[in-house]
Amino acid sequence: MSSLSLQLSPLSRWRHRPRATSGLLLVAFLGATLILRVSTDDLASPNSRQSGSLDLSGGIAVLFILVATGLLLRRRNGVLSAGLAALWLCVWTAIAVSTHGASTETLREGVREGSVVALAVILYNADGAVTVPAATRLVQIVGLIPAVLALYQLATHTGMDIHGDLRANGTFAHPDSAAMFFAITAVVSLWRYLDYGRRRSDALLTVLCVAALIATLSIDGLAALVAMLVAYGALRPGSFRFKLGPWLIAGLALLAFLATPVGAQRIAKESSTSFATAERGEAGTSLEWRLHKWKTLLPQWEASPLIGQGLGTTTTTEAIPGNRFSGKPPHNEYVRYLVETGVIGLMTLLMALASLINSLIGRRRILGTLDAGTLNAPALAIVIVVGCLVNSLADNTFLYSPTCYAAALIVVTVLGLPGVETRRSSQRAV
Image (cartoon, rainbow, N blue to C red; front, side, top):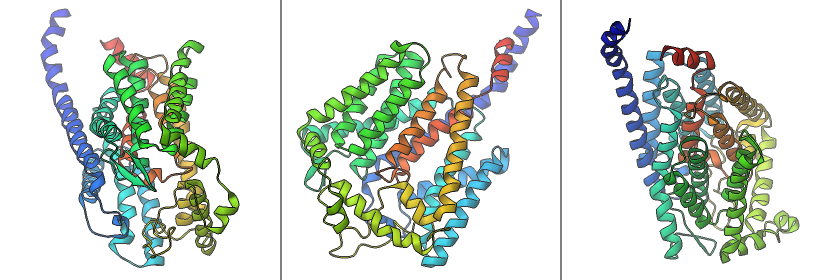
């Protein structure tokens, strides 16, 4: 029997080699495209959302859609979910066309969000070729250079001028988008250190990404990071000692943000927010600006409360000279989707998110007792979803394609983990 196993061993390795090769090629493809996407994010013009021209980010989005279509036709994994997501995007893109006319500007947001769905389809059809450790390492590699650059910008007092404050943005189009990406990368690195390998490089990357986030001076990004770390600590199995680490890092991140002069000034300034000032549109703080912006969007929603104005209509409006609120994104994803997709579209999205979280919770129960390669991986995915939902309260999280790609990379890879019976049978075979 053992001699037969030895004879079959080379044949078994030969059969698994194409899958391993395809997995490496897929990881290389995703790594190259995501690095290119992130490294050129700040090259887009400020009014790119009001333009229908196909730039590099649009080209990558189309590439993801083409690759996903080919894989879906060939392997047919997740056809129903992909079809429903595509149908949702098509319906509300068609509504945008009916309200704002047919143009490339109108189609832009549908294509962008379609590329996120496409990346999910690519990963789901990879048949486990992209593992959770590989996906997390890929996010680290993609975020490394922007994080180092953000710290360089902090040290040299450069970066992006946002209302008189110089804030680091790395290679991202805005400090807020950089902050959310760094928050995800920091939590991913912490997961790798605590629940996967205990490598010093992962601990170092955690510190690096938290520092880079602080350099952006983004309150929204800091809130998302703290929410993720608190949730991660709560979801870690074991005694209080095992939960304490993420909570301590959350506290240290808050203290470090307050220790920077501009960070402390920002917190003090935002704490002086006046609802009366926001009502008049005399915004002196970012929160007052957001409150007044949401107020200006309500009439648009009231014009079509059930189905909204169509996908992307709040972001393609051109700026009006002298009006500091026009032509700017809503800085709240719930308000944006309410205006763009109405009550029906927003409720559909929230139901889909609830279903996703429920699936991840079920996955956590199934995989909680398995090896270190999957241990607590569903908790990581849940934490990232929580962070995105918290960040969406005061920012346009889902307008940031790199953040969406990183989140999809982790979440879908976790959803693709094999179940208990599959893993147990493979362990018995070994």
